[in-house]
Length: 259
Image 1 (cartoon, helix red, strand yellow):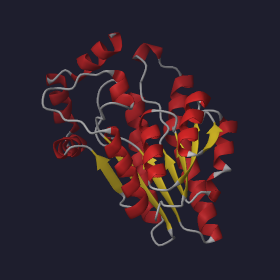
Image 2 (spheres, one colour):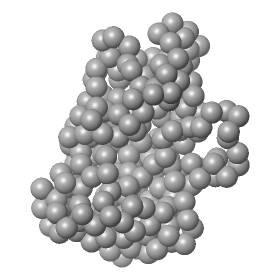
Image 3 (cartoon, one colour):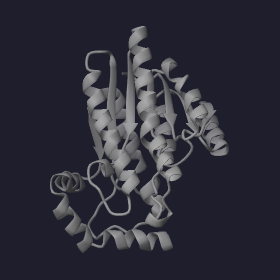
Image 4 (cartoon, helix red, strand yellow):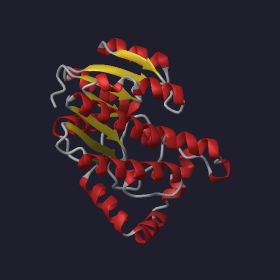
């Protein structure tokens, strides 16, 4: 699809990677519907890009339903909202599990299906970009809920992309790795092992643009060596675990939490 002149809904749009995605799509001529929980930052960004604001918490069923009612009128949807930080093991309860599953997995699936159903029924083309993570390819300690939901989102996206083939509606997964300057990894303050490279928020926005315009099943936004490491980890999780212990992945995460 051509994003110039398209109406595109972006969730998780108020800050971080979502805000960069909004700015890039607006620069390309798209009309943006921005949704997130934080009204102030959302309205400020919407004013800068002449966008439409929908304040919504996707963990709230009523808010999620309001967003679902908007998707059919959009030429594309970018489902970026997510919860990244897992609480310590002794602090996890069912409420937190439900919240993470709802925001990271259930609502993106629900919105994607509702969007595809309505666009196909009306004979209109469309595009779905689901923002996942390399954490949906390779697991790491202390990210149990995040890994679980991103693995699930990747499975859904790849299956749905194939199912939608030939319908006029496309689905692509955008999987960022370690992103500097904005986003969940940046906000965590975790120190990477020596030699591990990062990508920028602009790279993620470019990945989303490619997902919408070219519709590959998956766009991994990470340096080649990190992509290779993630693929290896998915094939040999035991060896990957030993390597992560060797470079003290869990210790680095815990030290970042204490800062």
